[in-house]
Image (cartoon, rainbow, N blue to C red; front, side, top):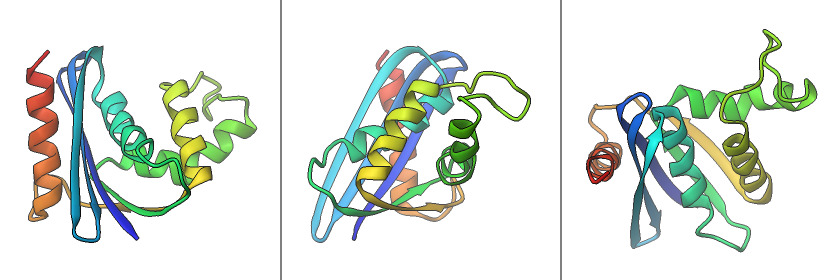
Length: 141
């Protein structure tokens, strides 16, 4: 199983954003990151997972570690009701970041993905590295 650590960052919210993912496939480690202007932290969190999974065009098994409850709960719990309710929240408002959710959902349905929330800014070296890389990417804007 391939392990992926993701994080997003934003200077201002909205503001200059950055994202990063560390992909661990056996002994191979790949780091990807990028940035975007006029974005939000949540968008960058989603973008990190999308970009990581987009690296693979053959079906694979993944475990994605994220410190974002928004991403983990959104893709594992909330999205089913959003789809059923024509992309409206329980308050009947349009789901924010709908296009990103749809991209992530498509990738998750193609691959075998398990999600694990981890405490941010804690003792996990890969989560801390993803956080550092996402912040550096945001600063490049």
